[in-house]
Amino acid sequence: AMLRPRSKRLAGRHALVTAGPTREPLDPVRYISNHSSGKQGYAIAAALAAEGARVTLVSGPVSLRAPEGVDLVKVETARDMLKACEDALPADIFVSVAAVADWRPVKAADKKLKLKGEGKSPAIELTENPDILRTLSHKKKKRPALVIGFAAETHDLERHAQEKLARKGCDWIVANDVSGDVMGGLENEIALITKDGIDRWPRMAKEEVSARLAQKVSEALGRDRDG
Ligand code: CTP
Ligand code: CA
Image 1 (cartoon, rainbow, N blue to C red):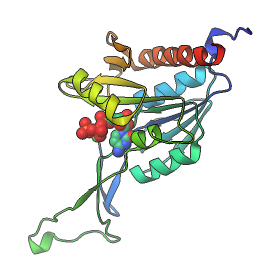
Image 2 (image 1 turned 90 degrees about the vertical axis):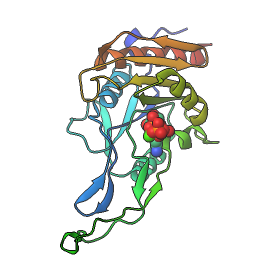
Image 3 (image 1 turned 60 degrees about the vertical axis):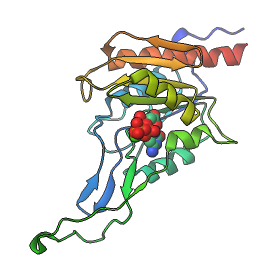
């Protein structure tokens, strides 16, 4: 078999990555969103590109620059993010790192809401957003060969992550303990959950988490291709 340089084992593969938060408008100046710096998702996109993959990065609003060699698609809402992901298929790998808003206001007012003078607080009716990870995992045609989700949890990390693996229909879950100070920070402490079990990684820089994950992806897909 032809040996690829170790760092280009994803040559010829297309990886789709989501990152950052989504914004769900209430009116032209207000929105509902999640905490997310986008750092982990951007680092994963960069690491997959470094392994030779063509990378499409679908990102909510963050203050980061696109990693070199990565195609950046900017979106605002969860529905836009889903559409951009579906437009980017087919992909061999999908890594769902985005902190997608679970709900959106049923109605986004087209003018700024003005209720203060009336002494009223607006009641905001919410509806559930599409689940992008679940949708791509369950595609009959065009399901990426390897689908990886994230689970950011503040408690019972591994139980929740294992439930998510099953519920979302993905292949791996990167379980992320956000009870401490990792949000927005430079480091992350994760456990990789697959059907084979749990692999707990020590706390390390987000770039290093990404490099190790990209390596695991290369190994998994390399086996498919050569074996
Ligand atoms: N996710 C997604 N679309 C959504 C919600 C979540 O693609 N509408 C993805 C995230 O990108 C992540 C995984 O699903 O990869 C888990 O997200 P998380 O918020 O932890 O799970 P939820 O199913 O939304 O459950 P909850 O927020 O109640 O814990
Ligand atoms: Ca959620």
